[in-house]
Amino acid sequence: MKQSNSSSTALAVSASAAVAAAAALLYTRRQFKKQEAIISKLEETRQAERKGRIRAEMKLRTHLKSQEINKAADTADQGDISTNEHNDLQLQCIGKIVSPYTKRMGTPRQGALVPTGKGYIQLEIPIECVEGLELYSHAWVLFSFHANTDMPTAKADARGFKNLSKTKIRPPRGNGIKVGMLATRSPHRPNNIGLSLVKIVSVDKKGKRLHIAALDLVNGTPVYDVKPVVPWDEPGHFDGEKLKVPTWVSQDDELKSVAFSPSAREQMVKLVKDGKLAPVYSKKTGLDDAIKTIQEVLAQDPRASNTNTNKRGSESANKVYSILFASIEVQFRVDGDGVVVSEVMDADLSKAEIVDGIPVLGS
Image (cartoon, rainbow, N blue to C red; front, side, top):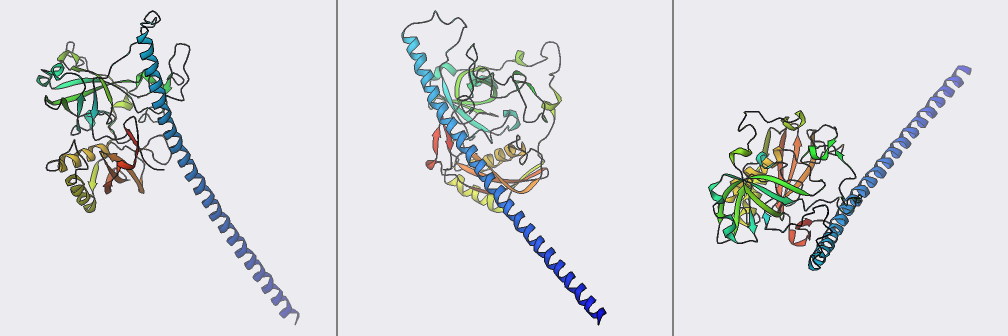
C-alpha cells in the first residue's frame, strides 16, 4: 500500500514538473515572439524615420541652395568684388545630364565599369561651342554633386566650408579603413565638384545634345565644363610609369553573373515598348541595350555597404533589393556571387515629388 502511494506521489510530481516545464516553455516562446514583434516594429520605425530625415534634408538643401544663389546674385548686382579675398568662384551651368540613372543608388561608381551605359548632355549654350568635339574619343565632364544629402546639416568652419566636419571617410569598398576625403572619389568634398571621364558618341546640333557613353552621372546633374581628353592626360605617356592605386581600389569584387528571370524579361519588353525608358532607350532598339546596362550596373553590387544587413558580397538570397533605372523599378536578389532580376515594373514617377531632379517616392 505504501509502495502504491509512493508511486502515485512520484507520478504526480513528475506530471506537475512536466506541466510546469511546458508552461515555462510556452511562456518563453510567447515572450520570444513578443520580443520579435517589438524588434520588427522598432526596425520599421527606424527605417521610416531615416527615410523621413533624408527627404527633409533634400528639401532643406534645395531651399538653402536657392538662398545662396539669391545672395550671390544680390552681391553681383552690387558689384562687390573686393570681399573675394579667398578667390571663390561662381560657376554657370552650361547643360544638364540626361541619363537612365534616376537616383544615386544604381548609378555606377565609375563610368568605365558600365561601358554600355549611355545618355547625353542637354546643352544650354550655343551648339557651336562643341563643334569639333566629335573628333575626340573621350571627354572630361566637370559637374556638381547636386544630389548630396548632407549639405544642410554640415556646419561651416571659420573659412566657410560646410563639408569639413569629417575630414576622413570610410570608402564603400575599403573594408572599414579610414582615409582622407581627398584620397577618395567620394561626392562629399570641400566643394561638391566632380570630374568624370566619358566616351563621346556624337553631337546632335539640331537637338543641342552631346551624346556620351560610359558615364556615372545621375539624371539632372548640372554640368559646368567639358574638355576633350588628349594623350598627355594618360599616366605614363612620357615616362612609361604605371598608374598606382591602393589595393582597396584595384580589387575585383564584381559579381560573376546577372540573370533576368523569364517574367522579368517579358516585363522589360513591354516597358520598353511603352516608352518607359525614353528618351535614352528607344522603343524599337532599346531593349537589348537597356538589359545589358542593367546587368553591368547590378554586377557592381549597388546595395548599401554601410549597414550590417546589406554588406556588399554578403549572401542574402531571400532579400529583395531594388533600384530605379529611368522610370522603371528593377527588383533583384543577390545569392552568393550572382544576381537574379526577379521583377521589373513601372515606377510611376508622376506621383513622386521631385527635389533637385531626384524623385522622392513613398509617403
